[in-house]
Length: 109
Ligand SMILES: [Zn+2]
Image (cartoon, rainbow, N blue to C red; front, side, top):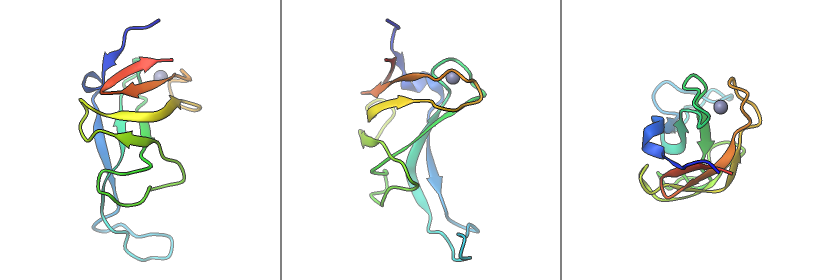
């Protein structure tokens, strides 16, 4: 049993995509997107191994960006909930962290 941590303590930032100067494989411009996922310091404590979790329902109301997405509720780091649980299968830190982000709290499974 580990103590949950506030998401806000893990340097969270919402990630955008596309926009000015970004082109896709066909050379066409990629429209700018906002809040397609969240990045945070790894919950294991490795600040040099950020954890990125893409959203199934991005903040900008657009479609999922990329092949995988977690269902999101909440629009701020204090309220964010992601389902299902998150498992790090590969990361620089190698921690294989598995846990939950629920109502702005990060908790190991
Ligand atoms: Zn880690």
